[in-house]
Figure 1: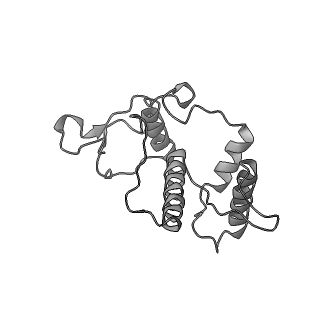
Figure 2 (figure 1 turned 30 degrees about the vertical axis):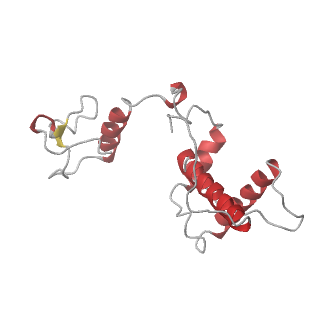
Figure 3 (figure 1 turned 135 degrees about the horizontal axis):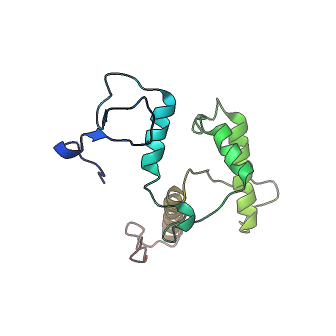
Length: 163
């Protein structure tokens, strides 16, 4: 879904009242400006725009109505520049992810032998996690149907209208 268009003549620049004394003229909205601005001013402009979004703590229509301890925020910020897909470059992060997958598997009583490791993956958001869970559910259903000698090519998942 495209949220912005580049064709509106009336809204081709970003106007920031509170950004900085360094930003006395409007900045182009869809192109790089000719001159640079201080990083503090760029931060303030973006921060001011983001303030127009909803407050996640007050959002009752999403999965983001949670609060985290400050230590969680610190850990996220300490690791935000890591590429979690590059498991060779970040083996400790991969090990932590695998330990978390096993903790969750045991929490939900996954049928694991004492020496078995759970199979899973970390995700960045709840939507991604739900889609991966749905895919795993589909594969499990297909495998069971194959074993029973039944058709397995047309799964039927019933969801609410809010999905």
